[in-house]
Amino acid sequence: METLSTVLIIAAVAALCVLLFKILSAPMRLITKLLINTGVGYVMLFIFDFFAEFFEISVELNLVNAVVVGVLGIPGIVLLVLLKLLF
Figure 1 (cartoon, rainbow, N blue to C red):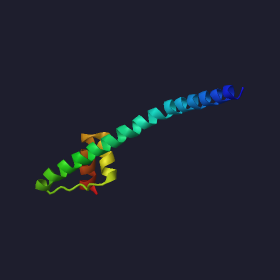
Figure 2 (figure 1 turned 180 degrees about the vertical axis):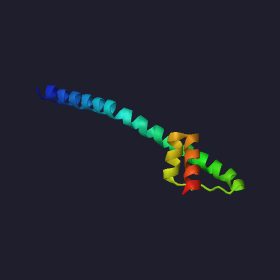
Figure 3 (figure 1 turned 90 degrees about the vertical axis):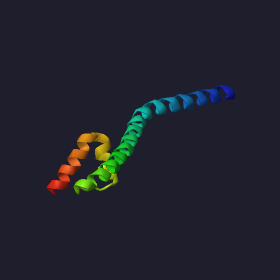
Figure 4 (figure 1 turned 135 degrees about the vertical axis):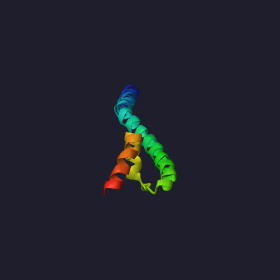
């Protein structure tokens, strides 16, 4: 009788783990995509900053700017340049 209850407990824990994995997999994919886009945004900002020195435009390389460029892409760089020129 004890082995049956042990098996049921193990099955319940396994089912909860699978359910938890299913629930958390969508946010984890979103977080992973955001981290990858942030890295790409940082690289894009670095390349832009390298070429922008010729035009005397400077955009800071920081996490907030990298997230903006990572989420918005090229329009994010344009937005940051416009904000820099206006303020």
